[in-house]
Structure formats: structure tokens, C-alpha cells
Picture 1 (cartoon, rainbow, N blue to C red):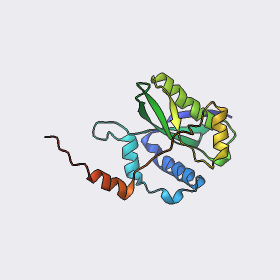
Picture 2: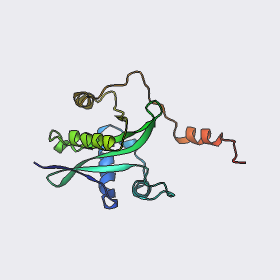
Picture 3: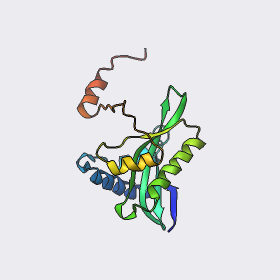
Picture 4: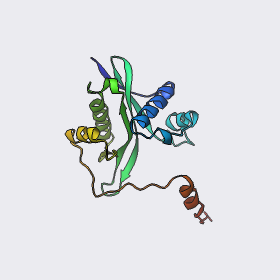
Length: 169
């Protein structure tokens, strides 16, 4: 069995969309998937006003067949004074689990973090996903129990954004 990790290219967009939906289905969140594939492709592979892609994707293959992916982007730690990598999504198809692809994807991201001078690699995991939590702990990850994720989205994001009453004058 041969494992390979490669950067995604624009032609992988249908595959990435399929894997995102498969992940959402596994997480019982398929009802929350509402991306437009063209917009997703623009944000992952476009220039976005000169800022480059908003996120990166690597594809994990087993014997030349795409079986998983990791989508990630840079964040920044003020305490460390250095960037980090935030893993937004990691997924391996059920049929390929146990082959070492999940570990290979995380190891690839860890190597990227080291090569890019990052202070850390971090991600969130659903509380009920005990198999994933155990897997991550076995790799040396630690739970950040003292932190709670906060989010503003949808109408609340629109309302809060509308309160920006400053100008560049």
C-alpha cells in the first residue's frame, strides 16, 4: 500500500466538494453545508483581490486513489509572535481508515508548520467524536479544555457588521 499527500489543484474542486460533504455527513452536519462550488473554488484557487487563496487543501491518496483531504489556513499567535496553521477539516473515507492516511495528512501539516516557521498546528474536534479524540491524543495533541469556540455568523454577523460606523476620513 502506497500513501501520498499532494497539494490540491483547481481540477480537484469537485473532489474537494464531495469530501467536504462526506465529512459533514459523518459529523451529522450535512444540513449545514451551503457552499457554492464556484465560490469555494475561487476562494481556494483564485487571487481574491491580490491576497491569494484564503485556504489550502492537500489530498491524501492510497495507491493513487484520493481517499481524504485536509483544508487549512494560517492564523497568528500574538503570544508566540508567529503564525500557526489552523486545520479546518480533515477527513478520510471510511474504507481507507486504518491505512495511516489520517496520520500522514497530519504529519504533512506538521512538517509544513515547521518549514513555515509556525508556532503550532491546531484544530477543533466535536466533543462526541471519541475515536478522533483518541487518535489525536495518540499523536501528541492535547485538549484545550479551558477554551470555548465562539462564532458570529448569518444574520448576527450582518447585524454586527452593520454597526461599523467608522470612516477612513
